[in-house]
Amino acid sequence: MIFDTHAHYDDSQFDEDRETVLNGLAAAGVGCVVDVGSTVQSLEKIRELTERYPFVYGAVGLHPDEVGQLTPEIMEELEKLLQNPRILAVGEIGLDYHWDVEPHDVQIRCFQEQMRLARRCGKPIIVHSRTAAADTLQVIREMYEDSGIELPGIIHSYSGSLEQAKIYTAMGFFLGIGGVVTYPNSKKLKKVVQGIPLSYLVLETDCPYLSPEEKRGSRNISANLSYVVKAIAELKGVTEEEVERVTEANARRLFGLNAD
Image 1 (spheres, rainbow, N blue to C red):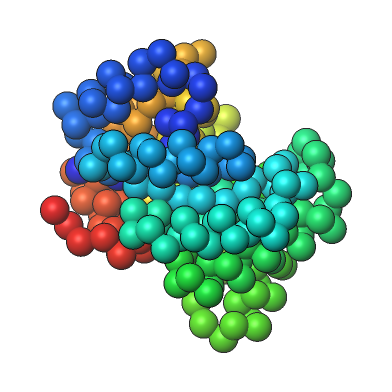
Image 2: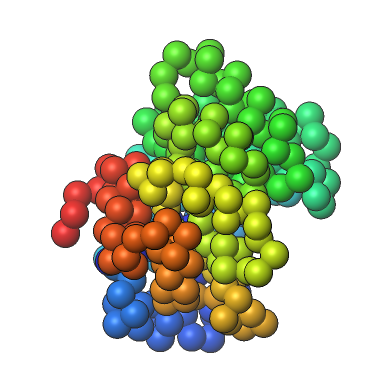
């Protein structure tokens, strides 16, 4: 079964056919989806999705571009939502130096605050890092060293080096692998997938974004993960069934979900 650890079905791109898309995922071999928060506006939508669809779970947090809205009241709302057993993680949180919507010091502070929230609530984190690999790793390592315990989570849409990947996995993190691995020019990510054990990889779409090569130019959905599974299987020299089985087990272990 395919487990999509990072989707955005709360996005407005699904407003016209959300139900049709989600109800069609089982036929494509998708058994579980985590809808991941990014804005204040997404929080309630995600809760509603988890109530409507038994196979949809949620994560809540503010994307680094949105952390200007991270008030004490929003932190309280996040903490309340995290008491819901269908809200599995804090995310997506992290650093984004590509768009630079918020000052770096503000991004770092809010990243740290949301990581502390995750630790208090006993939830894993889903980390966004774009053009900020060094600072993201430093902030996480400092939190890891301060806590003295593993910081379980996913480095979403992993784009760092193999050396950094080994550091993350040593701290207990999984690497989120999506459509980018199918792109002809994604040589660095392919090297990471080959060099990191399958036991540290999870599948993700980031839908409606980052469609695989075979679907470039169209809206991404979880059903497209079959192309990602195929690419990983070829890179690892294993069967597609093995990729699905192990990545599902990884996700269930991380999120504390029993197999159906």
